[in-house]
Amino acid sequence: MIEFVAEESVTVFQDPTKNWEITRRTTQIRKDPLTGIRTRILDYPVRLPDPPDLTDLANQTAGTCPFCPPRVTEVTPKYLPEVCPEGRFRRGGAVLFPNMFPYDENSAVAIFSPEHYVPLSRLTAGYLMDGFLTAQDYARALERANPEGTRYFSLNWNYLPVAGASIIHPHYQIVAGHEPTNFHEILLRSSARFYEAHRVPYWPNWIAVEKEKGDRYLGRTGTVDWAVAYAPRGLIEVIGVVEDCARVEDMTEERWSDLAAGLERLFRYFAEKRFHGFNLALFSGLESDREHYRLQVRVVPRVILSAIGTNEVNYFKMLHEECLTMMRPEETAAEMRRAFA
Image (tube, rainbow, N blue to C red; front, side, top):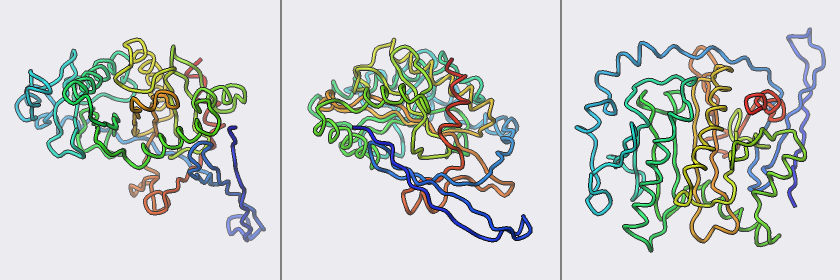
């Protein structure tokens, strides 16, 4: 049922770095086993530069940061009483409020804590939990306010400027509109199509296959299984799949804790490998997706590849909708698995 398809393309040339010796380089083109989205794995050695020291930038921006107290309650908008009587959703140090420049009809921004700059190595499970539970509070409030509405809920995080963050203070954004984003739609439709064809859900079967093969499976944190994607949509893509849960509204505190525990291990690995930041998205299903879909988080680390500021996203991703990586998923998983041991 689940196939891991790859083709190889060989280029032959005279190499000036080897006295014009005839050289062959192989590009592997993989297809994601569910969506069919392609990734090209390049035969290209890469050495990641050290991440920039953001201490000075953090100190310079702390004084005007809209997410630091007390400004977070002075300059951020509030919800209408029918959505949140208090105006903003709070759990511990986490605060969630409307996005002043929304991406969709339900568009929120939230901070995890009052702390302005939090390095990768300090993104612990405990740090994440209040933020995740606040996001769920918001999802449930939207359901109460409009029980008949359709909301494609995703939680999205650009960590640090290399990943697209315009503010150092760690924060995430929620998009929950009546239309999904392109990939959210591909994910849900592909899952439904697999279920219609085989009468079993894709996600537990995919986990079982990855466990059996052992090449990319990382481990399990409670109710969440983790694996490196076969056809990553970045240098690396890690997928965490929650057992027997399709919607963010149905998550339990235990499941959130299991998810946060796995992310802590992942972020620790990113810090050790000196990645510069990451993009994260949590994709929720609808009530009608319970049979075939499982709630999941996807994380892609980000880097600056050169001294002139080049990042790893180029025309292949932006205009061709294909991804490039120089890191083989199986080799990455072999290293990363130690973080999940």
